[in-house]
Length: 213
Image (cartoon, rainbow, N blue to C red; front, top):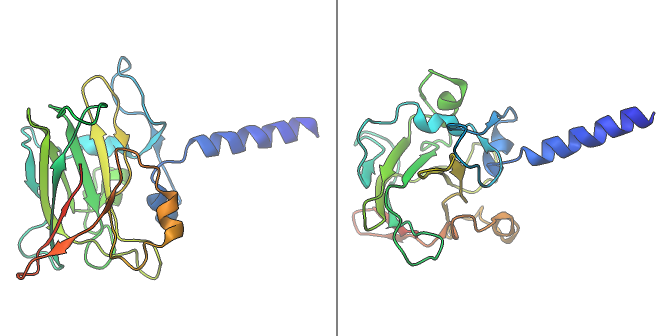
């Protein structure tokens, strides 16, 4: 009896330690929590679900800006830019790879690469940037839709790879005008990598613009 109780407690502790992307876990019950990178790289932020997907399909050469969605992609166009800083919050961080992925206009991770379970789950709307000396990044895509038949907020998943560290995740990009971004949802954000809650503005041509540092 005591053995079974101890086993159950250890299992619960293990499952708690393996949580990562909050919204992705809710949509995809299966998770692949692994630490990615050489053994001499330091782990930060705990396990990172499917973070190995950052390397699958990554271009050989990265710049500070990328266009994720093709011109024919259905949806409302969206541009997000900002500066990635070092821990002091003031010094621009150079050589940081930012990987983002999100749902399509129907709330699905559609038509993803089938080279692995993780890359297929991330869908086809995914992209990479690498900061220069000024720490800037920029990407153009479409505004993601919520998961079908759910009240999950619209969001963009970001992952970070910096020299000497394994891949880690930060809070999702979410949008203050999203009716699904309720106070209870906001409370769940951990302010990892700074606040991901963005106030978007809309230009006359229908382009949404946002900034996150």
